[in-house]
Every structure is written in C-alpha cells, then in structure tokens.
Amino acid sequence: MAQNLTLLGIESSCDETAAAVVRLQSGGERQILSNEVAGQTDLHATYGGVVPEIAARAHAEKLDHVVEAALAQADVGLADLDAIAVTAGPGLIGGVLSGVMSAKGLSLATGLPLIGVNHLAGHALTPRLTDNLGFPYLMLLVSGGHCQFLQVDGPDSFRRLGGTIDDAPGEAFDKTARLLGLPQPGGPRVEQAAKDGDPSAFDFPRPLLNQPGCDMSFSGLKTALVRAKDQLVADQGGLFPQDRANLCASFQAAVADVLAAKAARAIRHYLERNPVEPVLAVAGGVAANAVLRASLQDTARSHGVAFVAPPLALCTDNAAMIAWAGIERFQLGLIDDLTLAARPRWPLDTSQAAMLGSGKKGAKA
Ligand code: KG4
Ligand code: ZN
Image 1 (cartoon, rainbow, N blue to C red):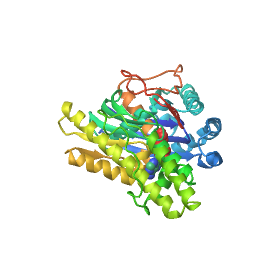
Image 2 (cartoon, rainbow, N blue to C red):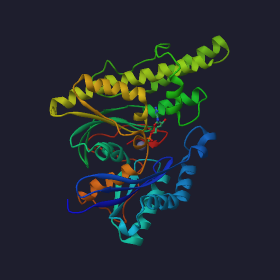
Image 3 (spheres, rainbow, N blue to C red):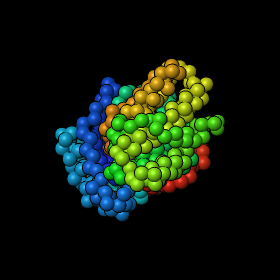
Image 4 (cartoon, helix red, strand yellow):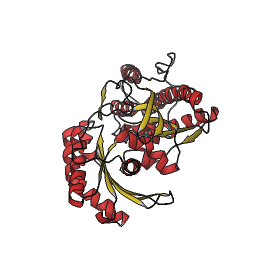
C-alpha cells in the first residue's frame, strides 16, 4: 500500500450518534484516532424502547457536534481525510437518513469521496480492525436487531449460514429487562442481575436444537419467561430480588446454550470447506456479554478453532467500525456519490431470501 488512509466514519442507524476517525498506515497498522459515541438512553427511558422519531431528531441535532468532537479528538481536520464513510442501512430510516444527509453535506463541501457502509458489515469486519484477521472467517453477529452466522470472504462478500427466525437475542434481553422492571438497554442489566442467580432455577426452552441447520428462535424463550414470572407473582404476590436474579440467570443460560449449540453446528459446516487456520469471531452488542463470550469461546476451543472477540466498546454500535468498513471499500474502489440512498433493509448476503420480522431496531436485514 502506497500511503496512509484516514477516514471519518458516521453512525446513526439506531440510538447512538457516533463519529470516529480511523487510519490505516501504509505498513498495515490500524489506528483508531477517535471514537465518539453519544447515546440517547435518557431520551427513550420513559417509553421502554427506542422511539424512531425521537431518535431521528436527536441524531440531526447531535451529528455536527459529534463529528466535530471526533475530528478534534483525532487532531485532524477535514483536509487530512481521504474519504467519509457513513452507515447507509439497515436501521431506523430517520436515523440513517440523518447520517447520510450529514455525510453528503460534508462530501459536497469538501469534495471528499462518500462511502455508504452496511451497518452489519461494520460489525462483521470489526475483527479485521482490532485483530488484523485475514479472510475468510466465521462470524456470529449478535445484536439488538440481528443474529446470524456469516462466512466472511471479503469486505463485500458474506454468506449467511443461518440466523434467528424471530427475535434477536438483544431484543430478548431488552424485553426480559422490561418485564422484570430493569432499565434499558436490558442486556447489561440482565447480565448484572444474573450474577446473583441460579442458572438452573428455571428450565427455559432451547428452541430448534433438534432441527438441522444453524437457524435459531428466541421468541418462545420470552414467552416462557413471562409465564414463569406470572406464576411467581400468582404464588407469592410479587417478585423477590432472588427471583429476579434466578429468572435472569436462567434466561441467559438458555440463550448461551442455544448460541453455543448452533455455533458448534456452524463451525462444523464451516470447517468442511475452510479447514485451514479457522477462526470464529463475534461482534454486535450482545457479544459484550461475558457469559455468552465464555461459552462461545469454549465451543470454538473444543473444535480446534481460534476465537476472536473485539473489545466491548467496539462490539456495541460505534463509528470506528463504519470508518474501518469504509477503508475496506475505499481500497476496492467501492465509492458512492450523492445519489447514495438510505436503506431501512439491507441484507448482507443478497444471494438468499431476507430474514423476516421487524425488531425494536427496525426492520431486520
Ligand atoms: O450492536 P448494538 O449496539 O446495536 C444493534 O442492535 O445494532 O446492540 C445493542 C444490543 C441491545 O439489545 C443490548 O441490550 C445488547 O446489545 N447488549 C447486551 C449486553 N450489552 C449490550 N446483551 C447482553 N449482554 C450484554 N452485556
Ligand atoms: Zn449494531
């Protein structure tokens, strides 16, 4: 590679307004020069979930400031950039539009190339930013709106091996938290509460384990949790803190078992075609969960497969992953122009039918 590449990344597809500057050095070293994330949790707290209109307005108000902060933190000006990368989907359309319009404005004003990035590709390519992974690798992308096993063959080449047929695990964590009166986002709260609980206190279902393939289902788990909670309330007149902990721990154990069993299947399938130096990488907000990470790591190890999990701040939504995916596309000459469209749905693997359903983060890819 002849020269350094420095990109600004912008992310606004759900409830984080984020901007980051990432540099790929001529020698191949990756540097995250800044990674600014402004959350909106407070704005949505009273509604029990992300309100798309409120999210879009907040993005529009905050984007300029977050971009400014990312440039200042990185100590670079617009003139030092090689291109601007922005999440162009999938996600909540108002938020995606805010980011795309902001990036178009910057591109028009500076003449810098504009690169539209698939948010899921951002997550899926993160292990190349953090761990310098080569292609191909197996990826479990597991977040608030998505859950899929992907074979990642290139910056623009993904093959889906299986995924959820209904809820995403992050959605299930968030619903569990809501049901038990814990604040949003639910994942970290449920994980925290589960630390004091008994994972075998409730025998929650592990759906689709008897079916072939890597597809998963999490909506039945949620229903089982509602029933268990209602039964406790009927029997005791309410929930004790220990009940809450046990429900969280048992729920988390069921999710861990399903992900581990299906990961084992995805690994075996992957190994049939890619036996050399195999890697399982995880990404997405739910991959921040220490119990799930440990169980996936065990699964990988028992199959002789290396395990890569990016640092927590790069698992949840951020713009460094968008800047990095932009660098990968820039190197392939995949540059957009001002006709770049915001796409609420945008499957990574276009050779297969899209997954159905629509989660709290908008339409599934
Ligand atoms: O990737 P992400 O930031 O946003 C997208 O969905 O694209 O993921 C957010 C999701 C939320 O549902 C949140 O509850 C979940 O990731 N999450 C967790 C944990 N941290 C975040 N789920 C389980 N355990 C965690 N520690
Ligand atoms: Zn995400």
